[in-house]
Length: 260
Length: 161
Image (tube, rainbow over all chains, first blue to last red; front, side, top):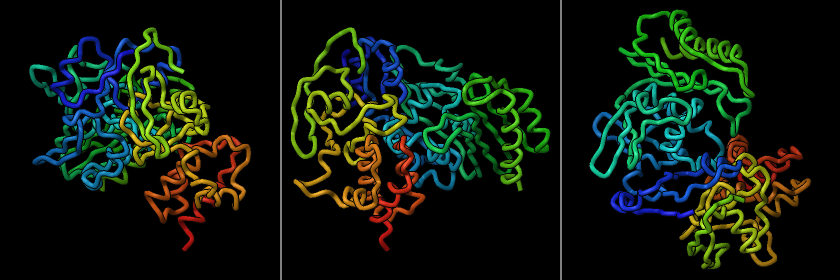
């Protein structure tokens, strides 16, 4: 296996002939460990300076794709305005995992239960995808097609995550089977301000589902609308019925707190 | 162990427990394999091999990581501390002594990881509360379930009040 660790995007574009993009490794290494054969070459994106940093630019927040979950957890920029995203990082894996796992990796791994995804959907996050010739900016819901399936073209990488909203109240809820190192049985994020109410729900369909334009509806109507749209499955973490029930109850609880 | 069809090699230069190490290694070697098999530092244990248990925890550039989830080539240029580097000569660290004093060790398999997670926690939050200690070691499983004595030992340093 060839290993490349470019130190700039320019260097990166010179090595991407056959590429497996690699960031924290916390999802990829266990996959290789379980018998999947290692790729011919991997490109380690962690050192790319263009993929680093969390900053507020005008009214939006920019997060580099190689930012670790631990950095998200500790960033003061997220504390008041992007609380749901920060909360999702607190319950994420363990210290060891958070120190390696990146937000870009969590997005590109495209697990329906990925913890940062429901907050990113609820905050209307956009993704900056970069190739040799330039950029394109797309909504996160147009990037993820299904489990592990993403809209990333050959030669492209996820460079930044942009969150357009500010000054919103938000909350993240995750049900795991234990507190640390748990994969979500369900999770959801609610983003609320004067004019808008958005809910995104994870682990109840092949992708995270986003529900927006909910202002004016009763909590019961919102919940029954969501209940009719989701398609949860039975798996080792819980049954479909359990997922429906706990989602209804927890949405009712969190919505009543956030809408006053 | 990861399996690769191609045997590619790369030179890495790391500082392990304060000593410079330069070695030509296979690129698909995990940091855990490098420490155990190339450097004979067997304190880091392989248990789950997927980041769940923390028995392979080492400190890399001031952060705890699961050495089973890091490629050794990724550690090029990094500074690594393993359990073998925690005591100085014959002198146990304060936390190691606390583990002795509080009888925190049962079978012992998780202890290298627990000590390293604890050492870094004490460095990062010298006054960590019981809750913060529990959160800080939540990536380390003790299959004997002897958490209370482990938490007591860490708290004896951070909560000495």
